Image (cartoon, rainbow, N blue to C red; front, top):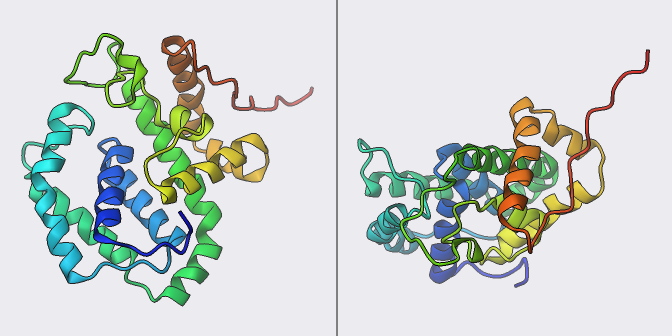
Length: 230
């Protein structure tokens, strides 16, 4: 779809669902993703009718957690409260006037890409360092054949490095730009890897992903830090 696509209720639902999925259980990651959406689509805004409709998604969001697609919510946080919090984040991200958001998008684009990449890698690492991988309620005969059943899914490998579609054009565009950063090493890639946890997790994430996906290997590897000559 065009970057000028209007925000319909169906698209708002889709983006919100995917933000829960791609956040991998992290409130910080979800806020970063929703802010990125607002910068990549500065013409979007949520009206009150959309907000009320989105608030009715609590059972569906809860089902994602039960199915293992989204990490379980803390027992002290009702799903509706969690959903309302992130609808609020989505509203806040879309609240600035379009011209202001266009200017912010230009100024904050690189920093946003860097942060999205970092939170994706760190969240991948949290799950892929576990022996059993991600929690999945369904044990399909070939679980690694589909992202929703794959306990060793890496969002960064699958959607960024391998360029598989995310389900929404705005996220596809975001992930494509991050892939370009990886394929053209430079200052922005250095900024992604300047975070010690990201730099530590990324090679491990790729290694685990490749071990469980021999037919869709990630050939790209992060650059190793330059060593000083004596």
